[in-house]
Amino acid sequence: MPVPLYQAKAEFFRMLGHPVRIRVLELLQDGPKAVRELLAEIEVEPSNLSAQLAVLRRSGIVTATRDGSTVVYALAGADVADLLKAARKILTELLVGQNELLAQLREDSA
Amino acid sequence: MPVPLYQAKAEFFRMLGHPVRIRVLELLQDGPKAVRELLAEIEVEPSNLSAQLAVLRRSGIVTATRDGSTVVYALAGADVADLLKAARKILTELLVGQNELLAQLREDSA
DNA sequence: TGTCGAATTGAAGAATTCTTCAATTCGACA
DNA sequence: TGTCGAATTGAAGAATTCTTCAATTCGACA
Image 1 (cartoon, rainbow over the protein chains, first blue to last red):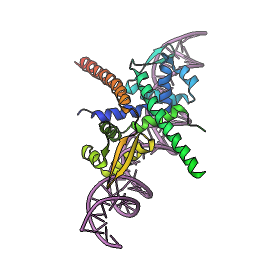
Image 2 (image 1 turned 180 degrees about the horizontal axis):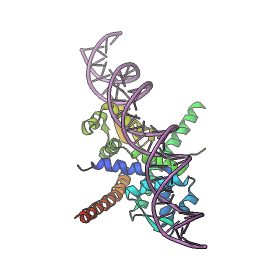
Image 3 (image 1 turned 45 degrees about the vertical axis):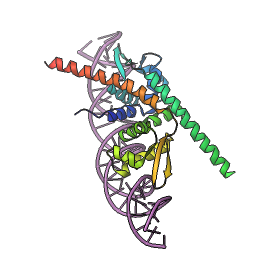
Image 4 (image 1 turned 90 degrees about the vertical axis):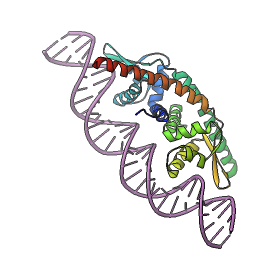
């Protein structure tokens, strides 16, 4: 029983749908990072970060390797940059649209 | 108090994270579609589809216009195709990776 | 105006995801 | 071996999202 493709896609996007996970992926675009480094840049409890890293790991989009007493995460080679760029493009349009709406509302009440 | 960008991004991806919503966006790439047409192609209760369409509408990624007794949805101009293409690319890599893992597991047990 | 079909909405319970805490794993090093 | 720090895990409650039902809106048309 193969998972329908649109369901796999939905799960993929849901995996991206968390602020901490987004920040981790963005940080990893500059290269591998230890958990401690991530912790230093993201305001979140260690156990919470671990949980979010586990979500990313389970999806396969990142890999974790132990290096002495620290664990280093890296993008699993996938081209995350393109995805985030496409997302940013749409998001920009959407936010601009919302601002225009806001502006209209202001005019109406003026 | 502006919404942090990474939170806006996370909300955006969460908005995409539902099978029905993905299918709607894919169908709308071929042009505007009436709700009845969507309903004919997606196996889901009318009220459920409406709820998912409401999520898409609220995000601004689609627009709804009334045409007589039917309502027609369309992409709000945003370049959704690029996004879905980038997502498919990564997803393909991830699924291939999972298959390789599966193959290894089979070997191990052989 | 009255009625019909298309679509949406509100409400409520089910299901999923998040967050936090305490406990555990694992390697480094004395 | 014993202990420390780094990171993860399991569990439990809180929060969010999903699904379904019944009720409502809205235009078309008699």
